[in-house]
Length: 400
Ligand code: NAP
Image 1 (cartoon, rainbow, N blue to C red):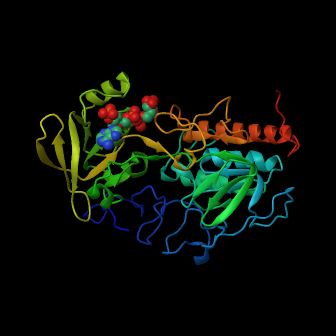
Image 2 (cartoon, protein in one colour; image 1 turned 90 degrees about the horizontal axis):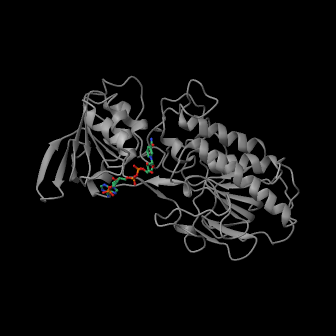
Image 3 (cartoon, protein in one colour; image 1 turned 90 degrees about the vertical axis):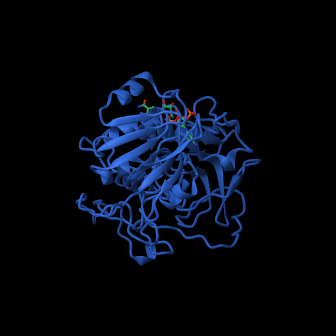
């Protein structure tokens, strides 16, 4: 993977590389978490095609063939310990804190869940270098390490985790059916915990230079911009927070916002305007990211006059919000105006037996710990629902 900077990384004291939101290495190179002290283990057989390391390389990955595999006949679920199970009481979609916490609870309730983890498992924490607000880690913990621990904990109690993206679902009848890379999975209940993904400007030059100076994660990549001049795009709290955070590294931060009014809270706006290292540019959008192999500048457009100007710049952070990963569910479940799933009565969806947890419906808190709490609640709700349907016995002690 191309490294940032042309000074042979004199500013860096380890071999980390910038992230992109594929969570893995580009061009068959090293993992973006290359400097981390995680034993991902795994020989070459654990790596996906292209030779890139997977963040969970040492933990078994079940590979699905390209062909449609018929599901086992419906009927009473008899668990055999077969790691290729396709039928379960609780089918969990997503493997961030919500999905894996749901798996831990469901597994400990003897429901032997299957987790369809996505092809880039672990969720947004896989892009975070240092998690300092997750309880239990007084010295902080690297995001991928935290997710590897959650996954190991879920697997320890019998969860089967499969690193596949889902293609479509059919929630019209039970068992609910979900297809992923040609395999049909069936769940008497489903927990949706697919999270949300960072939005991009969708400029060709922005996409080409991702990981080469363009990033959507200041906490992951701020480190690479020590004493450099960089820009942040956005007018919400995320952009303000990232701009302020990046002043720890950068020599100067330009905040670029397309309007002259902000969505961010007043306290964050004031902090941003008052910061000596931040210059705010309103009515300003990025027309193009300049540079071939790395970011060298920005072509900025005045949204009021249309006038363009070029500004030398070494990095660009996009902080314009997130998109919930709900496309595949939109025909089945309620979504709000921003595309987030709507939960009713705690974690229930409008379909009995389908539950919702984490950032896929929560755009207010969006924290690992709240997502984990949601996953716990969804698993307990699923367990109680299965029990009420005569499909499982009550295992988890609760007081209602
Ligand atoms: P947000 O509030 O939706 O703001 C997104 C910003 O990006 C808006 O200013 C928007 O501009 C701009 N934008 C969107 N698409 C754009 C595009 N294509 N080109 C240029 N600009 C674009 O998102 P957020 O900042 O991620 O915050 C999401 C939620 O999390 C909010 O409720 C926020 O309060 C919360 N949050 C809280 C904290 C905190 O309290 N510490 C920190 C982070 C986030 P327009 O305004 O013109 O639409």
